[in-house]
Image 1 (cartoon, helix red, strand yellow):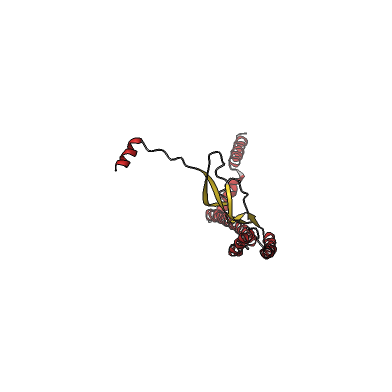
Image 2 (image 1 turned 120 degrees about the horizontal axis):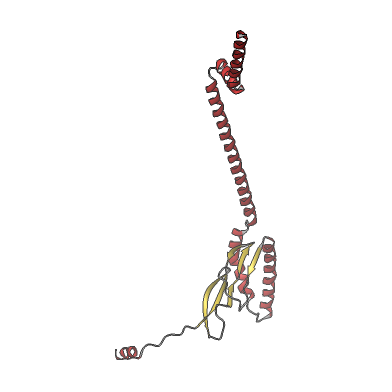
Length: 211
């Protein structure tokens, strides 16, 4: 009877010892026996994982930068095509201004009238070619409000208080736009109210007269 009880106690203690060790602990125990460099292996795996993440992030960053660069180059290419005629238009503007001046006066003879008709025909052809490239004229109407974004005041005319100020009195030359880009502002003469000069005090007038 005594031996049987002792055996039961030994079995109970053995079961308790078995229960205290988890499967993970048992695995680690055997791994450390089989692989003495187990800790180093775990450290190497961690380092490799960090390296993979590092290069993965670097790849995605480089890919995003490449895509942004591609879009930027495509936009620059589109703008280069869209505004390719800008330099040509700038060189042509003096000739266009000459046409504008030549077509303004009313002909005083049949010969002058025929010349003007020919100039108008040539000008219309040039204008049609420019229209196809996205060129538009800026010719403000007389009496229109002065717009500093598309006009340049080359002279000022004083008007009475009952007349409108800051409006176009005369167009000196047309302006030109290429699509949405201003190439040359319209040259205009603008109205301005007369300045009222303050009268000098009587004492100042007398001193000036005595002097």
